[in-house]
Amino acid sequence: MTLETTSESDIATPSHPVPVRTEDGHPVRNAGLPLDLGMFEGHAVNRSAAERRAATLGTRRSVKKLHQAAWLVNAIRCIDLTTLAGDDTEGRVKRLCAKARNPLAGHIKEELGISDMPLTTGAVCVYPTMVAHAVRALEGSGVPVASVATGFPTGLMPLKLRLEEIKYAVDEGADEIDIVITREHVLRQDWQALYDEVAAMREACGDAHLKAILATGDLQTLRNVYGASMVAMQAGADFIKTSTGKEGVNATLPVSLVMLRALRDYGAATGYRIGFKPAGGMKAAKEALAWQILMKEELGRPWLSPDLFRFGASSMLGDIERQLEHHVTGRYAAAHRHAMS
Ligand SMILES: O=C[C@H](O)COP(=O)(O)O
Figure 1 (tube, rainbow, N blue to C red):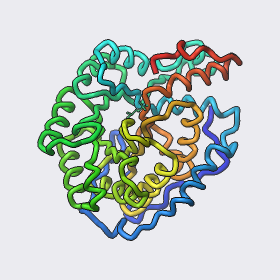
Figure 2: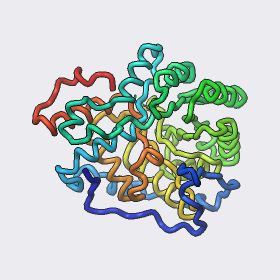
Figure 3: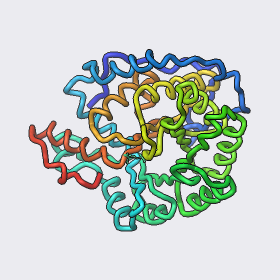
Figure 4: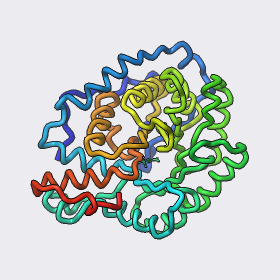
């Protein structure tokens, strides 16, 4: 099974290359930079060009039918399987973790010829008080636990408490922390305040990786999206993420394109490879295809791996499994058969 498209571009050669992996094989973490407004102020974003570019992704037949199954299996590897609901319970988290360990039914894996492939989701993503349940349920699986923190989803809490929340989630065993930024800092163009808060959050994370949720649906302009992406990376974010899933508008392809261009520009300037996580509202397998095509065409093959790419989704896995079942049997299963995703 291969991941083929009609076109692909690799990230520009960085002017300051850094090693891609550490000696023990882990990706080198972004060390950040001092705040540098010159990297984004005055940067124009052409909304209609971004929308036109995004619109072609869903319509071009750039993933041939034969390869679609491989792309869908790859999407599973990159899902942060998520539950972020007010009525979350230990039982729900345990069921989600069981699905993360074993995301695809045995007969589908068998028909696809991947029975021996160790397939899991990229992570499980939960609220801080659910982290310990997830850590226990995922023990020995290698599936990381991600926790939202910092007053998710709005972030409107004193910074001291937001930093305490990060430390709590890390102490409970979270490997990754999905923080939210203060949207007002972006809307007021107070880049120093944004930089300082994300840098403090990165420090509070310690060894846990920081994913910076920009809540792009609240940021008003694509220029703000580009600036916020750049400042989050300068402050040391390991991933930039579009949305909480709770804004009026969540992940969209045009916004993702702007974030990826920022990520590419930051990579070209520093050599650091930053991850990207579109999140919120993605439910269909065809969306998993469109986003992966975007990643491959904008950044190249390394950004098709869970080290550098995640989907934040509570209900996309079910449709992916359904499409794969159709691929191998020619029939669609009822949606409730793949309910826990
Ligand atoms: O970070 C993940 C999102 O909260 C998931 O959003 P969703 O429930 O719309 O898939």
